[in-house]
Image (spheres, protein in one colour):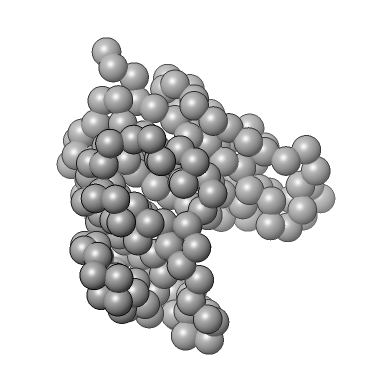
Length: 185
Ligand SMILES: C[S@@+](CC[C@H](N)C(=O)[O-])C[C@H]1O[C@@H](n2cnc3c(N)ncnc32)[C@H](O)[C@@H]1O
């Protein structure tokens, strides 16, 4: 993604009231898990990262927007929570993810096709990926930032699908959602 697109996100985070509400998908999937190491990619202002840090997940949160990461820092300090952060462009492919390093990787409301191979290998055996992405609207020009119907679960064909959801009728903000567990071999 170009520098211009990132400034677009910076501008949005500067102009909007920050929203630290965690995604229901994350809350529902994680509530009963024992906290471990969690990576939140394209974390935004960090609603999910902060919610995970609260019960003791060791969270690292990554986003291309320095403004969003700054909002996350301020809110973490206000709540006396520790969240490691990194400003990085995921599209450069330069973020190296160690194999089996994370019990949980969250990619919420962000879609990048080439992220799934490195993300899957970075999850520990028995660990989860929780992901959601905007669905491609029928009749609209294909966007690389939107997922086709059925595509998201396809990245996890060799994993256990714990949850998948796509609305029957797709509108502009409709999300595909998947929670998948890396099998114990
Ligand atoms: C719709 S927001 C989702 C934020 C958060 N994950 C959530 O669920 O609310 C998309 C986020 O992706 C980030 N983003 C966009 N392109 C990116 C890239 N190439 N690398 C890293 N982050 C990116 C934006 O800065 C923005 O915070």
